[in-house]
Amino acid sequence: QKEVEQDPGPLSVPEGAIVSLNCTYSNSAFQYFMWYRQYSRKGPELLMYTYSSGNKEDGRFTAQVDKSSKYISLFIRDSQPSDSATYLCAMRGTGFQKLVFGTGTRLLVSP
Amino acid sequence: SAVISQKPSRDICQRGTSLTIQCQVDSQVTMMFWYRQQPGQSLTLIATANQGSEATYESGFVIDKFPISRPNLTFSTLTVSNMSPEDSSIYLCSVHDRASYEQYFGPGTRLTVT
Image 1: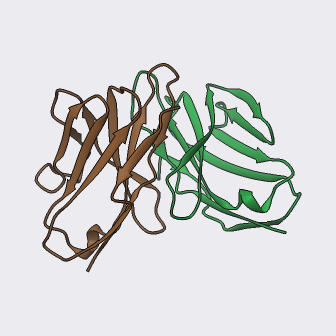
Image 2 (image 1 turned 90 degrees about the horizontal axis):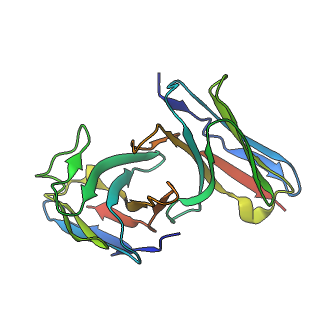
Image 3 (image 1 turned 90 degrees about the vertical axis):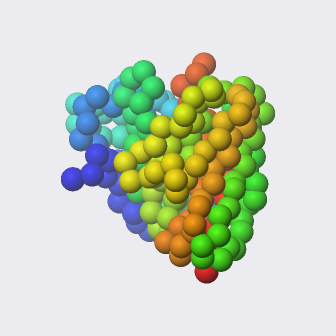
């Protein structure tokens, strides 16, 4: 079993839809949770960063962490074609430990 | 956030040759990382490079194949040695911001080995 599981998609939605992207994990030591967006032929771009459980909102993006269920989510409201990209979840423990990545979910938002 | 640049952005190389990838950061950072992203795959950490010490390699990666230099706090190189087609991948440099605990990535180097 992988430490971090993420559905590879693709996930296809119409413009304006609410998108839900999710990851599950098995290591209860993970404390820091990140979402990266990666456009084709580009490096990953840090979108959201949360520590421990709870929600964090930034514009159209909301990151949610449920440590009791070992489940994290990224919600995108009013999705746009420019949101079409691969979304990678990543997480790590305390101190500095290496990031563990999900495989990424490819999102396609059609106009 | 740190701004990271990589050279070259892409290259096509012949089997058996070596390629050195450069990573430059616009601020001083303690920890720099090198990742590999194979087609359709997620990111795999190759090694962690701290200035002034030997790089630490992850399981499955060795110094002879992927030698790393870290001469100062803003620069690092990764060499892919004796390349084979299996080394075709995107190689990414990354840095860890100690103040914010956030980790940032460069644009990547797309390597094709023929």
